Image (cartoon, rainbow, N blue to C red; front, side, top):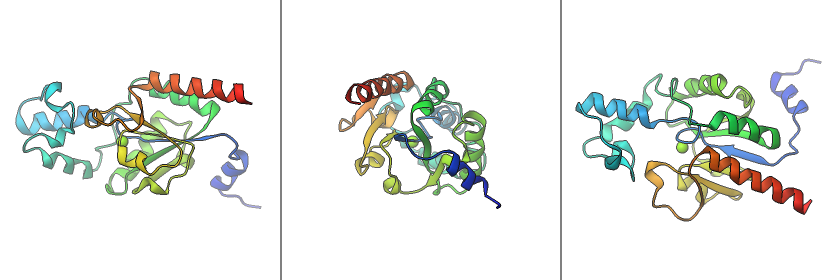
Length: 197
Ligand SMILES: [Mg+2]
C-alpha cells in the first residue's frame, strides 16, 4: 500500500522522547549581521554594539523601515548559523525529538527560504519537523528555546530564553547565553533524568 513520506517518517519515528521546540531566528540563525548590513547601506555607518545592545536594530532612531526587509525574498536564505548550534542540535537530536518552530507566516517570502536553510544547515531535523507558524501558543513540547519572552510566556513546558540584544532586561525565564550553555543545561537534564529513573 502506498505510504506518503510523512506517513513513513511517523511510523519509523514514534514519539517516545521528550520534545524540544527550537526557534530559528536569533537562536539557530543569526539575523543581526544582516540587519547591520542594511543599516549601514541606508545610513552610511555601521552602528556600534553599544548603540543597539538592549534593543533591535530597527528600534534605532529612524530605522523602523529596516524590519520591512524581512518581507524580501532571500532575506532568510543566507543567514549565518549561530555559533555552535549545529553540533549541539545534532547532539540534542540523539536524546530528544527536536523540532524547529519559527514564527514565519508574517513573512510569506520567508517560508521557502527557511525550509531550504534548514535543509542546508540542519538536514537531520528535516522538513518533517519544521513548524512554520505564527502564534506559538499552539505549540506543545517539553522544552522551548526562544529569544522572545512572549513565546515563552504561555508555554506549558520549560522555556529557555536565548540571549539576544533585545531581551537583556528579561528576568522571568531560565537564560541561556549561547549554545554551550544550552548543551550544559540539557546535560544536567539528562543526568537528573537518569538519577530519577
Ligand atoms: Mg527568534
